[in-house]
Image 1: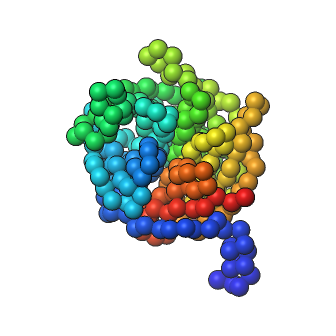
Image 2: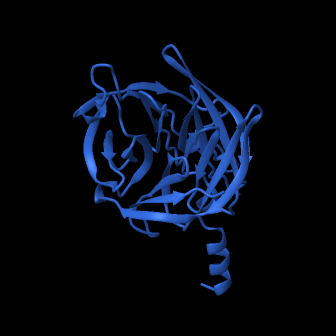
Length: 278
């Protein structure tokens, strides 16, 4: 690697505060969410069953919980409303042809049992959906933009961000807004944003989280910050992270992010805390 590349890389890279290697059980980790002080929920993707893993900030597993009423076809991200409800996105769709996409809604606290996650099993409610703008399963190569690995909760709504696999790659990430109404989930396309990258591998979204009016969006080599406005999400900052198969992101505190990577040719499964930039 040239000295010029090192200068560019370290000039723009986020400051890494700490890194923990994760258990081999997380070799296919796909999502992370903070639920309270020093407690996080992790999920794996299709290589695992319908399990939630509760860990601490060091990566130690505190509980493995089976999710009743759920199937892990391709779990890709999780979101938390900050109070009582966790959402699992069975939204992986590599070939863009799935017709069984789903969001699982899980109550993780109640008045009687404040820590339902620490039971051996926990119940989920399934909400099936399809993208309103998808007409072919799969679509043509130039329209392969119905995969997703990113789910966030904000102000009573869920947001799903697409993972673009178009040929030729056009850098467009689609933002869908989801609202729950009685026993169904309504979904609509609200925005399209263009991200950096010359291929889906370097440019596609692999995770997101929302906090305090900002949407934090992860790819294999970048973190974006979008601010929420009446007219939609507006990109305000972009920073590099070391290139790896990063799969999940959560806001850890007011000035910290936490990201997780699955095992790949780019490195082992790990969890990294990153200090937010000014």
